[in-house]
Amino acid sequence: MKVAAIQMVSGISLDANLSEALRLLRQAAAAGAELAVLPEYFCFMGQHDADKLLLAEQTGLGTVQDFLSDAARDAATQFLDLVDQPDPRTRES
Image 1: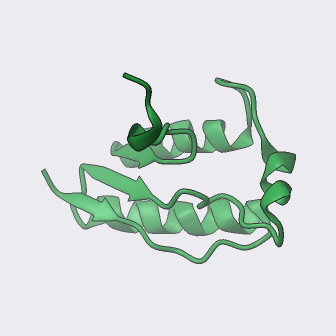
Image 2: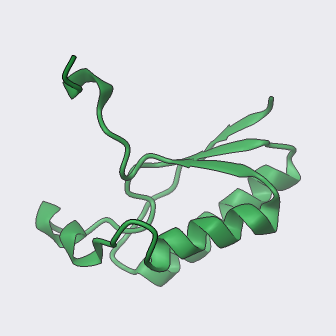
């Protein structure tokens, strides 16, 4: 399996960040990637930690989740987005 580890510099514009992520995901798919891994805050990097809360989405609903679903269909590639993944080091046994 060919994997693409995507690196990008996200800013305060959600639309610009999603546009850049889509460009990079398409580039990865064109290069043969079957799995693409996006950075933790690929969609938004505010000036303060609390800024990220402004874009919080309900599970299954929202602009970022729709983007990821549409992009995966478009590129026929699986994506791993680490935004909402729990840290396994803090998981209780």
